[in-house]
Structures are given as C-alpha cells and as structure tokens.
Image (tube, one colour):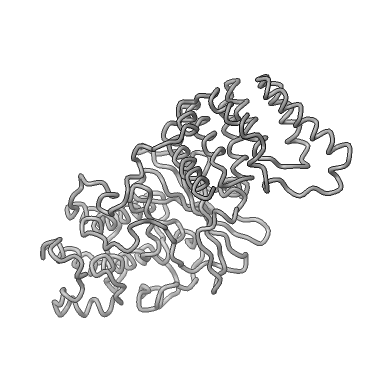
Length: 446
C-alpha cells in the first residue's frame, strides 16, 4: 500500500470484534464470518484520503520524527468505522510509538476488573488473528492498546504491519525482547506470547518491569513488589497468584513451552470480575452511547426533516465556504471559468425555487468544471439527492463536503441524514455525534 513517497497503515477502532482492531496490508478481503466480524481488508490511497479528509491537518493525532518520521491521522470510513492512519516515508519503517488517545480518564488508575478485561480482550484479539492465519504480532506492548468510545479495549493493528518483515528491530528495550528474537532476529507466533506476558506484568504492577527482574521476584515469592499499590483490596491473593502464574508461562525461555492464544482466553475468562458493568463505568468515562443533546439543526437531521434542513441552507448561503475554496489563477477570467460560475448561479436559483433536479444538474456541471471547490455546493447537491430519494448519492456528496472542510458540522449532519435514509441507524448515530461535537466547538469559538 502507499503512494509516491508515503506508506500508510490503517487501524480501525469501533466495532464488536473481541477487542481486535483490523489491519490492512497484503491481505485478501474475506467475507464476514458467523460472528459478523469484519475481515482483514486492504484500503486504497483514495479511500484513506477520503477517510482523513485529504490528510487534513485538523485530523492529525500525533507526529514523530526520530528514527522513522510518521504522522498518525484520525479518520472515518464510509461505513462510519473510526480508523487511525499512520503515514510515513518510504525509507522509514515505524518503531512503536504511543497511540495518543485524548480522554478524561487519562491519569486515573485502572481498576483491577478493567485490567483483567484488557488482558482478556487482547488475548481474544490474538486468538482471532491466529484463526485468520495472522499468528505473528510484532512488538506487542502497552502502546498497542487503544480504547473505543465505550471504553472497551482494542488491539491496534500496527504490530501486524511487520508480519512479512523479519529482522526489523524491536522498539522496546532489549530487556523486554523475546529471547528467540535476540538469537535469530526472527519473529515467531510464540514471540507475541512472550510479549503478552510482559503486558500481564504491566497490568499487575502498573509499571514496565523487565521480565528477568519480575521472574526473580516471583521466584523469591516477593509478589508484593510486583503489585500496584493502587490495587490494594481489589483482588484476592489467589487471583493475583493466577495472573502471575499465567505471566510466568508466557515468559518461558523455551518458546514451545508458552501457551497459545486460545489457552490464554480459557485461563482469563474465569478471572473476570464485574462482567455486568460496562467498560466506560469501570474506566470512569462518560457513556459514549448516551443520548445526544442535539441542536435544532441536529434534531432536524435526526428526523430527516428535509424542509428544516433546506431552510438552514437558504439562510446560511455560502458563508462557510470562506477559506475552503482554492485560490484561482488567470483561468477565472476565461470562458471556462465563466461557464462554471454561471452553472453555480443557475443551480442556486433552482435551489431557491425548490427545483431540486435542476439544481442538482447545475451543481454537477459546476463540480465537473474543476476550477473551484466548494463544500457548500457538495452539501447542497447532497440535500438535492435526499429530496429526490437518492440517499447513497447524498451520502457520497456529504463525504466530499467533509473532505474539503473537515471541521464543518453540516457535512457530518448530512451524512447522518443520508445514513438514516439508508437504514444504517448505528452509523447515523456516530455521524450525529460528530456533527454535534463540531457544532459545539464552532459555537464556543464564535
């Protein structure tokens, strides 16, 4: 995957899949299985460009410029699944870097029940990868763990990226590197199990303890030194001992003696606590699925009240195009440019008179002229499509409006209305929330 001087990697983050975040590289598309799990999938540069609104600056999550310069963008696929896209130079290959997630609970110690849930979800994710023939996971560490809006743990795909690239260095300290990798420079399925053992120690201790030191403490039965003081009173000695026993098996020097992902899942399921409590409660997060408090515009889109949406567009005009259109060259004075502008004017007249088919045709002529870009024209054509019962075309235009103007709430709201018209309720709710958030930020600045 990639284009010109860049390579890209996708990580998806909002769906029910035993904690797995799927990845895209050299993988054939598979049909969904009986559990309705998304298959591994390769995305084109055009799809990634659309998902990130043209790799917009507003969508940058993090930037790193040490050994492997890269930029991580947040994005959204056409089906509303949230993704992260890592973009880096052709000559570089990314070491592990922290995947930054901005949330309220950033400094709050994680409860014991949630730590156990993280371990189980990651083990299930690794089991899923193995079942799909992707048993190799390179450099599994705490930075590979991300959380969705409901607080559920997910496994980032960034480790899967190196499956076919043996010999790449581990980004973590050599003290945490699987022994067979130090001997041969090759990644094996058992290497991920070793790294999973270090993650179990991280969850137990709240610190990144070198495995050799941890094993010395375990042999000396000095488990108190391994336990996070923030967890006092939250678990029994038997529970702590069982997690330590499992970590010890994972850290076995002999790779063949380590457990496989399926046995990890089997061992972790009985340890789970407070299973009826949602993850967001255990994390002290607001409920991402809570009912939205929508503005009148948001309510209109939630009801697919096209008349109300139309009135907003009429009042708005082209105010939100300021700064969105590209600078024009001498071509603006040519006949071609004049024809393009005339098409837009005719479209506006038809739109004002509610002749939506004529407006759609004129706006199409303007867009195909290619001399100017206007998020409002795409948004107006989107509404025209909705008015004449063409919701898929409406959705496509709303996506294009967002590509041009990534932080424009109207684009998200139109996506929501289109998705509702298509019967895609869950995706529409995500778009509504995004529109509401963008509108709130806009109003706070105004």
